[in-house]
Image (cartoon, rainbow, N blue to C red; front, side, top):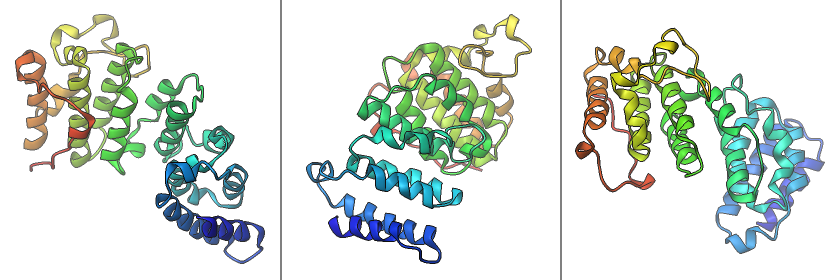
Length: 267
């Protein structure tokens, strides 16, 4: 680990050609070295200034990978909140790796006591086709992790279900299938959300409401009705959602994030 840290420091201080590329290579070595360290060894390093410097000296195209690296390197920082200004600007719906930035901020919140007002509403806004089509399973699992918290209000969980169903209509079939499985898993962990699959949940006042915000959306999942005419594999998961919604006896009893799977789409 010491050798990897020293290498990164030397690269950051150098004026070599292709500096961003050299920095990223040194960071990759640092991540590998950190994976071989114990948690006790990790906390001895205070890489706050080094990592901030790395952000400043690398390019925008490198920052997606840097976000992923931060998840392994935050334990080497004196106070991970110091990196927040570099991360925060990417936690925006317009950024195609906003979900990676969200994960860094989520870990700051969960493990380091960072306060971020509006985290859930911003994350909801970041659920867009272009932000979820790549690494779909990983992004869905992250959403499940975020919602796996007793303090998340039911209306917020339902907003995420609605937004995912909304996006499922805008992506290719393989991605749609995974998103629907993500919706089913959310419902399994939050059974009150099953009501959204029933016609009784339709709210007349929101009949023409097409947007989904944290506090306002049409709860009825008409998207499932549309998708019930889709490919066989998509029809099957839609039927499964409705079947479990109609009768609690059809729902799995023992649930854990470790059991979450996303079956392949049947054509």
